[in-house]
Amino acid sequence: MPSIDPLDARLLKLLSDEPRIGVLEASRRLGVARGTVQARLDKLLGRGVVRSFGPEVDPAALGYGVTAFVTLEISQAGGHDMLAVHLDGIPEVLEAHTITGSGDLLLRIVARSNADLQRVIDSIVRADGIRRSSSVIALETQLAYRVLPLVEQAAREG
Image (cartoon, rainbow, N blue to C red):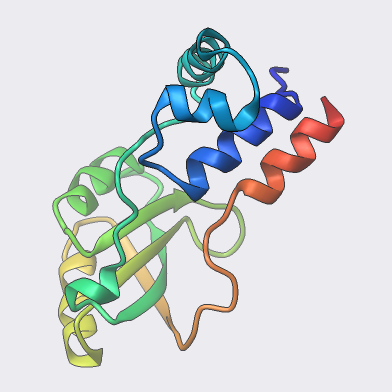
């Protein structure tokens, strides 16, 4: 099981706090050689710990102020792959996860308004193999997606 150490955790926190920081400045701030930072970063990228350096985009700032979670029950004969292709064609579907429990897939979707949410859900359930959908609208984000506490814990557990 791959692990990270405290230096990896400090590097990840620095990159999270200041995503535009360069390797040289990161090495200066962390008090290690530039080559050490580059090697650590290459290793984290190679292992898939760091997946992207892209910007974090807020859908609400783009006009998509409604967030909802949709559970889909699907026909098991059709499988998940065909449905994943369908969902990939709907830009408002931000995530899709196969789940356990009463549903088969959990989606995080966005829309411009409640009326627009109906349009998005209609486009989702248009696919063959969907038996039922259930949705809940997020009223307010109490805790946004985060991974730094997990990084810090993984570094402590080494």
